[in-house]
Image (cartoon, rainbow, N blue to C red; front, side, top):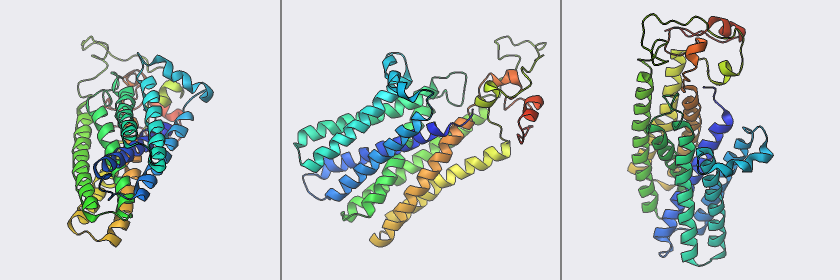
Length: 339
């Protein structure tokens, strides 16, 4: 599928922002009575959380044909995962803003705790809703799997904790808390890496049995494709298909694995095993930046690897020998992938 950058930014930045809020809420709830979590960390991480969610919301409006009608997306909450995505994102961002305001004003802790819980529920709801927008598309097998909502949730929380650790390691916080968060991040990064490897393995085997003969439900050896469709680039051949070779796919996968998981896990291990406040502050920032950039590559590749079944008709199906030579020639510079 064509990778829409507005959706990449929405899911990555909003997800990371909500992950930061989950971390700060948990730390505040556990350590607020001891007074060992500085106000600067809560306010700074809360502002970053709001900023990342705002970037995601603003980016998503560029995906709309009529942004001024975007609010209408909430009207189909009973039947649409997209409506639930909009509502849970609004709920999460609103609760985050109110929670930070309550903290700054020193308001009643029980009311603030309730607002924080609503924010966490909104964040989890957003992870599930945004992932189900794609997981519910049954004819794109790379998306239609339980791994999709699991990945969106785990990756969002992990990237948020990575950003929160960067703020935490550069604040006046008890080193034991920083070490504890680093260990949690290391474990989550390892789990995320395993999930991503399982996803790539699943994607590589998704369409091994799909062909023109059985795609229509009739497995007859005499069936063959007689017409590849139109001979020019149009919506179906540009939005539902993104040309890339097997070599490019492997290269992008390696880039995602290193930037998103290997480098952050290595840095988290260094911080955990040999904690030094001055160095750990710098390393934690590098870790967060690497993971966010890697997540952008990961989500972009998630869209690219979505192989719409209608590409069988246009001769662009990724596992069926070659792309449509007529359509490929019509788009200057498009490589024809041959397996």
